[in-house]
Image 1 (cartoon, rainbow, N blue to C red):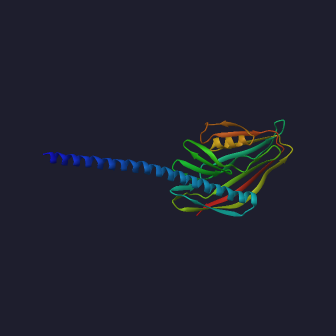
Image 2 (image 1 turned 90 degrees about the vertical axis):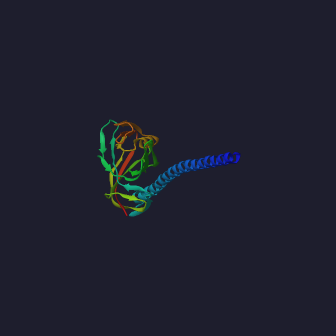
Image 3 (image 1 turned 135 degrees about the vertical axis):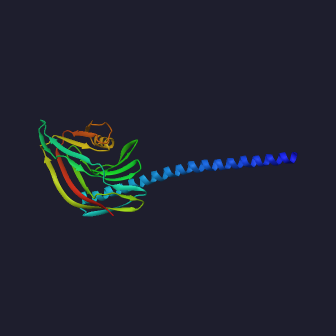
Length: 251
């Protein structure tokens, strides 16, 4: 009888130990898989950020250094690349008495957007921004010159082909210069510069422009996607606004 009890006890002990091992392995696998998934998603977006840095440099080669075209490879990794909601931009200048000396009118600037679940990496108006549900940040600033004696605002208007590319392939994003035109070249008649920008990433744009010495106010839906910034810079001496049109295609 004692031997029977010992056999039952060993069987129960084995079952308990085996169940504990299975439970532990299941918990580790579940938690580990979630952690690996999070790490993979984070690295995927970080890779997209680095690719968009290269894309911004390539566009700068076209706008600032006269290159006719450039190509940028971007790995999608179960994401999508396409155009998206535009950024609206206009620039005005006023003399010391408040009389308007020029205004560019409104430019509707299409972006190139990388979408991965709830994260978007955008190139628009010369800047790379990263937009998530918990906020937005500027990865690469635009090539604005906003000093007191010399202001240069490049308006980079992308003409992005229709449609989206999705999946896990590597996409070649080709940029080709189409038009370059001096919109404004004013010296001595402008005292105050005003820049209006409506963007899905108002927070990083506001922070960037204020770091450059502009005073910004916000209109519209607070930090929402259609918030409009009005930023001014007094005591400027010369203003140049240059418009570029660049064709963008995916292959």
